Image (cartoon, rainbow, N blue to C red; front, side, top):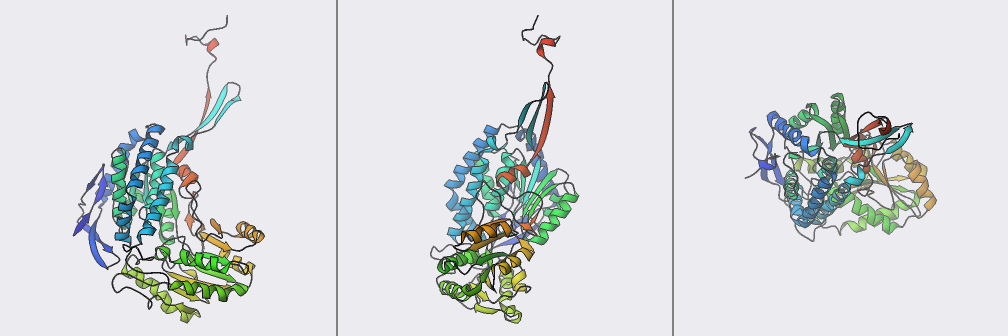
Length: 495
């Protein structure tokens, strides 16, 4: 049985706590490895390593940091096929999805390579007579990231690229369900020249999370996951005086107006709902069909479902892989069982159509006539289940989105530019797509939702990521006029 340890002081080390957890191959349903769960002493050792490394790394030149990140970018691009295989093996997503995840991570490394420009401050000469004022951006120190199972390479890169570029040292606690990609990234960064201790990877469970929250050397916490855990980390982390950004759950609506191109909207809904088996916080969970578009739209979506090949992610012809665990698969399937009792109609039941015999598979599912207030409507299902809500007007669709607990992402499909512009102004979410179903920002903007989808003041990566991982210091300076100084400064004096 393969054993997965930690990354400390620039090398992979075995766990010493005696505790571990299973890592499955979701496509076959078998345990393929055991990952070590760290003890408190091991967590403390990771933080101590980061603190030691931070003394010199925080003083490193911007050009050196950029040089290392450029090398990391090239290594990551060169080895992306190998990393994709790791992702597919432990998460289950198909290789094309895995390659897409790595590509989005690469964008964030490329953004962080511009750190000499991104950390420029401001300068005001002669704010008063002989007085200059300027700002500088300095690292926080040791910062930590707690990342989810659904994007085990991309989300750590979201955090660590900016954190390290800004001069911090980084302790990463990846999901225990698919930890190997984080160690893969650590090896590439070592090869790129990152000094030992600047990045440490510590595997484990809630004990690790709680210790990072309370550890006095950890200055900031970055998290992506479910809303209950995001709220827990935010409340406890800020109580400890730490800076926290905690991204929570989502229930993303896609509004389709009567004038929309039905074929285009159906293609978008299928891609956005079932890609990566629906295990992504930007997945479309609900289509809000306005007026007479509902019947043709549901028919168009249903007609496309048979084309989606479900099977092991390692097989190139498959378009959707398994879910991460048996327990999660069964939880997602329970919504299909309960939908008729809530007044909904199960158009396609993924428990019955084209599921491979082994592994944690669930077929694509479509549920029509979903009612607001039901579990199918309110909960973040996080699987290949697409619900359809029917409303009569644009105003009713907008009210649904703005009254939902989550405010992560949304989309609208229409040919009417005025309606789209009105929607982007009136909708109460953090990321909006216009005829784009998954509006994940490019790396030079920032990712984050509103309401229960985000706890904290800063969104993830991009410019707000740089702000999160630095603090601003303002310097006000006045120097004596050399002509009046009694010290010989080498300047000519007026006589």
